Each structure stands twice: as structure tokens, then as C-alpha cells.
Length: 253
Image 1 (tube, rainbow, N blue to C red):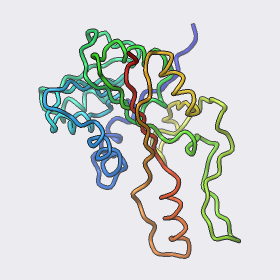
Image 2 (cartoon, helix red, strand yellow; image 1 turned 90 degrees about the horizontal axis):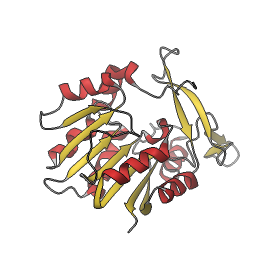
Image 3 (spheres, one colour; image 1 turned 45 degrees about the vertical axis):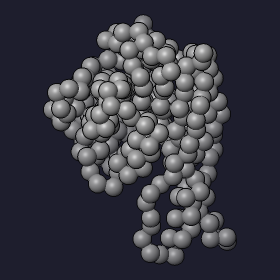
Image 4 (cartoon, rainbow, N blue to C red; image 1 turned 90 degrees about the vertical axis):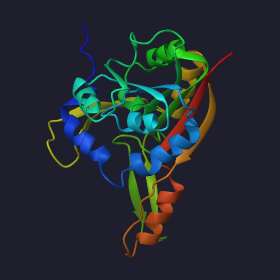
């Protein structure tokens, strides 16, 4: 039997929870306000946050009046989510491609936030989303931008002659599976696998499983460089080259 790829973040659950609860994170400053704007949550809507991690987004959706369900493969993260959430949020330890705890057509909206690139069986995940979503339901995907953030194949560069910071991309169309360190700067033995796929992969996978992409947005960094000789160029590059890609998909009728 082929060994399953290790993609869970359970081993660094406490660190991950502390990261998300801190100030100035992309999750809090960039992703959350944009998602709330696009979700347009109505009181009583059922929202599934798939691969929910320690429950940062589930709690925010609940504050908007949604009936929220969270699911993650890592029981360590679900344990933390339960400890830090109101009792009306329901959590399940589950893979993303077999949502046996959900009845057919029982969910209004599904979010998959910064985790689709850590999920191997994407087509089966999308099939389960189609099964679980009500008529008119929507899937909301947020990912590291696959055109500019390619693990170990992209980086920042500096053009001395023109005083420009640029994004170098050495590979894009080729799909890859890359081992990455979970906690940058410490414990190099703690790693997970991430999957790079070009943008067309997601459009094709969504279309084949019964979705149509109804909206696309690209979100850039909110950070600014401290004063220095490269600050102006660095800030311009941040505004021009997006960090995140957002896709909204609806079920084909």
C-alpha cells in the first residue's frame, strides 16, 4: 500500500494557534475582511470551514450569525478549536474528501482557506463539496497565489541597475509535491507536504466535479517596509504582485 502523504499541521498545533491569534497576521488583516465582504453571511446560514485548523475563521463566521461547522484532519487542532469556541460551533476530525458527518445538500457555504495546497486528493474534496452544498450554495477558496508563490521555485530578486524588486518564478505549469518546514526558523525535522498546481488545474478540477468559477480576486500584502534605500521599490512590489488568490465557485445548474 502506498504511504499517504503527510499533510497535517497537528504537530505544531499550539504554535499555529498562537500565530493566528497574534496581531498583524495576513489571516486577520487581509484574508478575514475580504472573506467577510464576499461571504455576505446571513443569520442562520450553515457554513462549513473545511480544514479549519484551530478555529480562527469559524469563530469569526459565528460572530456574524452563521451556524458554523469546522472540520480538520488534525485532532490536535480540533481540540484547540473546541477549547476556544462557543459550544454552538460543531467540530469534527475528518479528512477533507470524506465528509460523512454531513448530509446531502445540508450546507449553504463552504470555505477552504489556505489549505487546498496541503490537500492531495483535490477532486474528491470538490465532489464532497458538491454533495454537501444546498442548491445555490457556494464554495470559497483562498490559496497562496500559484502564479507567484511556487514552493522552492519562486523568490524575490533585486535589479540594481533599475532599482526594482521583482518576483522570479522558475517553474509554474509543472505540478509538484514539496516538503516544507512547518515552523520557519526552528525544528527543521517538523515538516509537511505542500502541492503546487497551476491556476488551470483548479479551474479544470472545479469544472469536472460540477462547479463553475463565478468570481476571482487577487489580494496583496498589507505590510510596509521600514525606511531604507529599497523601501519604495519593496512596497511597490508588494502592491503589484499578489500574495493570495481567491476563487468563488457555484454548482452548475
